[in-house]
Length: 190
Image (cartoon, rainbow, N blue to C red; front, side):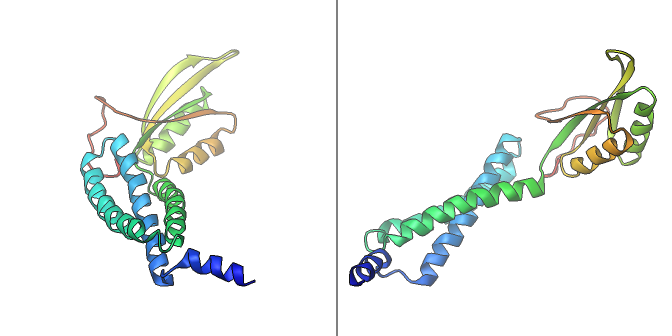
C-alpha cells in the first residue's frame, strides 16, 4: 500500500485543495464565457462578445499559467484543468439554452378554421403572425408564420398544440431579418 501513497503524493505534489478548486472553478467560468461568446458572435452580437472575450482571456492567462508552471510538480493541476474545461462546456451550453438569445420563425400548417383563431391568440401575445392560404393533400390549409423571441417559443408551441393537436410545426432560428413590420431591436436578447 506504500506504493499507492507514493503515486498519490506524486500526483498531488505541493498542490492544495484550495488551489485545485480555484483552477477547476475558474476554468468552468472561463469556458462557459467562451461558449457564450462564440454563440453571441455567431448570432451577430459583436459588442457583448468582445467584452466577454476580454474576461475569458484574462481568466485563461492566469489559470493556464498557474497550471503550466506547476503541472510538473503537481500533475493533479492538469486533471483539475481538464475537468473544469469539460464541465465549462456543459455549463456554457446549459446557460445559453436558459438565456435563449435571438429570434425564431415558427411555421404552422393548420386547418383553415383553426388558423385565424391561432393567429388572433398569438397576436394578442405580441407575436408577429402572417397567414398564407395553402392547399394540403385533401383540403385547404393555412400556414402561419410566427416571428418571436427564442426565449418563450416553447410555450407558444405548446399553445399551438393545444389549439390544434394535428398542426405541423417547424421552428427555425433566424440569422437576419430585413423589412416587414418588425421594428429593429438592438438589445442583447433580440
